[in-house]
Length: 509
Image (cartoon, rainbow, N blue to C red; front, side, top):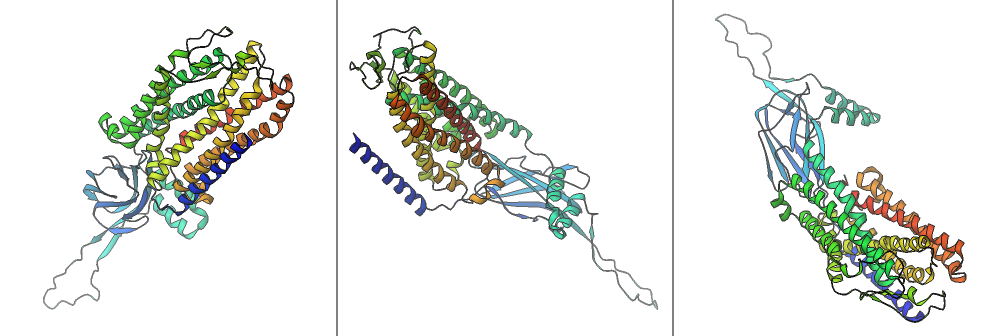
């Protein structure tokens, strides 16, 4: 057994090194969707009247009819008559053209991963005054100076004044940003509502999905117990499938509004990911029917066809035969397992995975990250559920075998999750020192704090609580400590899953 475990560890280390090497040598050049250049440029004064404003973006944006608007000195919003996108370039046409004055232009486009990025900048328009020609009468003396062509600038606005002040005073940067965005027209109120609906859907899907998948992994590889407990776990998986369905429906409604209809959703990578989750959630609900109709009352030796009883007595924990029941998926269970696989794979087709980093490698890394996180988070939840169920039923916990099995699973899952997570983070934003300056970076920091806290608690369980449990498997104080620490660790990991749901559409700019 020890030799086999050592061989497994060596293979895991080798695999981790291979993934890291590939990630390092692969091309990590990618473009965040953001404004690259514009004409007029930020703070520039151009000759007018001005009919066209050009915006050139990095990445691949999607502009809409309401993606551009300007506000003049009086705060009046002026909309272009057309917004035309050609590749990464967007041209807004104004008719009548913009006249002399100071303006703030606001823009808002959708990136490849469906989240919106926006910004604003100020510019001035100067209209030249035509020169005057004077006809002299005979004998008249010409004037010493002739009128010259002059440029008439509008009185500087608050934005223009703030921009000028900022250039003279480096401490005025905060004032510039407030004035700029306070003067800019507001874009995409309807898109904001749709994004909120989509975000709520993701907040439901991510924790529910990883918990359901992890519970299945735990049931297959670490669970040993009564049929009633297995029924509790699988019923929980089915209810979590309902949560995935509901969250997917919300995300589908939001995306339909953002993309312009269900037909556009089907043609979009993120839309197909949502449809896969809806199908996966449905399969979680209809699968496992053979083992969920179980009475809550304890029944000795009443195992379904999906549960295999191992007749040997567990001498290490003094456990009876019924505490050694194991789950072996059969029949309709395959539909639920296919649903779980669909949900895992769906994460390779949305978020930053589709827009940043080497596409295939990023997709594979995303799938591994989700699978590892699910095995860890959902496994913790399942272990906590079984331990609390036995505590409430007033039966012996027989926790040692499950904790030992899950300990090995959790260490492998944590290593896989951590390695894949680091690679994905560098694909998305390699400027680690700048994380605190972006929405995505701040959420990533929050997620790292939660994961680190959970990992430290897991280390405490492994190196402190588990040896005590091995020494005294029936000690109620040790069992209670195990139950509490596992519950707290599961809560921390699920909070990290919720942060991940927000990370998917967070801006890295």
